[in-house]
Length: 256
Image (cartoon, rainbow, N blue to C red; front, side):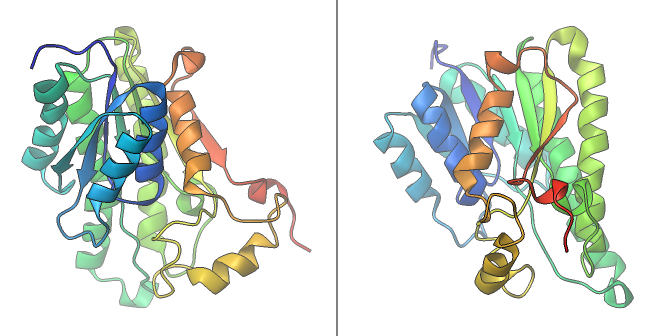
């Protein structure tokens, strides 16, 4: 296909939650998306595609396993093959598993970091090598690790904390090319991951936690997506190597 005048983004973990909301956000801006979906994800990427089209946008679906370098490379290349360019890379895919420290096996630790940290590296690396100078990349961290610790989630918090150091270093390295790299640190956001009552807070836990947030509720995926959209827009042209917290004020309120 000949190069398209529209800007193009690749988004991992776009079958639901923040990734889906971002693809729809981009559609409203005229940005084409490659919707990254993990084959084992129970959520339907076709629903993301439908919402993108309803918003007047264009997108394609591409299976990607961020644990695999060839898979991530093929994912980023899909943007170039389909639309002739790549402008934005968003590393959003992640897993969340509950594991007390005494039960933290090496396999559990390594699997978490392989997806939630090394998977981010693979996505940013693949994006940077296919992106023209002047692009932008965003990695999704978490308030757990990015700001707070979280009991029984040491592996998750370690991975999400590592994302921040990775983004700073990538920003420093790619700055001469005009490629910006930033992170978002979502607080408590109502996504399929946070609604999981086994590995996360679940619906009741989220509702309780929302009462302690100055905004009075947990966040919505669209509210994080719009911040990612800002960080990959010309409005953030001089912003790089930063980590922006999106939490409704949770981290600035002292609990009674």
